[in-house]
Image 1 (cartoon, rainbow, N blue to C red):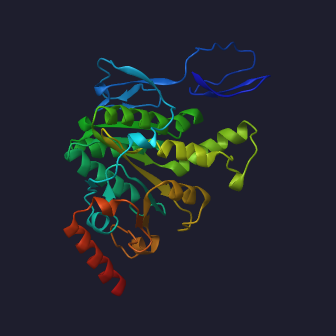
Image 2: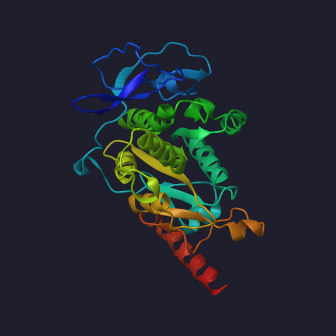
Image 3: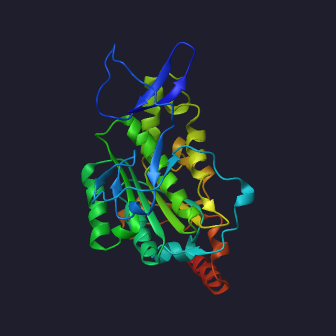
Length: 325
């Protein structure tokens, strides 16, 4: 299985989505279709791969419409204001860096500072409130994916969510496709009038896979050897989330930093296309503070308008107290 990545006069570049290597002289056939997946209520409680195949959980009856995974984001007149709060269940975030339903937020910081714990806690809080949650693991270790699935199962929320998972052992094309599949599923539930929480874990890894694909295809490398269209690839994905007339998609994406550097290329790209970021500080983590959220370097651009007046006032006083401290 593969998808056309570029079409030129002399050749067609195809991104392979299966582990089987293609050798010279092998016959290939075009399907005449764009890459689609089947979406429907049957997805709840399943762990699937980016092609929509069930990899964990009973497959059952797979009924539903087929949707293309790569589409144009909805236009601005189909969107609304972010007015409803999205609770994460983590007090420091809910009070100082609050989120709203339909917000796109980056969770950024060093490895092993507790970012994934925040994301899992948010999924748990939201799933219990009736939000459809989608967890998208990009190029993770199989053991990390299993740990997340075990957490969802133990807390009894797997039946209210969908997991789109790829591991580092799979074809690079699968890693690249995973976030698009997750977003397509999120759009299905959002258009059914539901609030959706979509978690990408993580987009820095996704960018690295895309860089690998582009360099293999001999595309001209740009800054840090990333392809020139890396911003467009992520921005188009993020733009598909938001608050809509019917339902909302809140997108939280994880991003690892190197040596606590917030000014990395992909990290700053993601900051400029999201509505704020929660910064996990490795120095606070080293002091044993949990969660290691830095309230001064974290930003929320639309979450405060979703807070009640009382909570907003309390949040201001708390921030002032922390600055004084």
